[in-house]
Image (cartoon, rainbow, N blue to C red):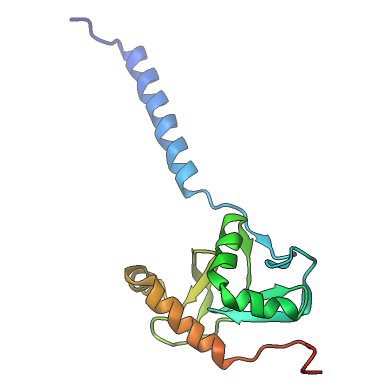
Length: 154
């Protein structure tokens, strides 16, 4: 049986190390997020006076008419934001787990949303039942107000 000499073994170990590190970096690499610039409904330029707050996220629209369309199927548009790596403006004030004030530097990106937490321990709790906590965020944002003019509200 042929054995590897010291040089061959060193080369193999080095190649394996580069391969392993390369895979680890690729897995950890965050995809760069883009700010929202287009209405998710009509793909027009957003109007910062027209928006809907949904599950701690502010979704800007192009016109008041898009509010109702968005509200009929918000998950359709959230999926679009996720697929296009759009970072929405956060209006979230409290942690969905503890209802304590959030720390903006502690967050998890989940299904097109950047969910903020009060501490890193709450991320693990969120991961056990994300939909439960997203619904809590939706209740929080429903307490907030929508802004913008429409034909019935000037």
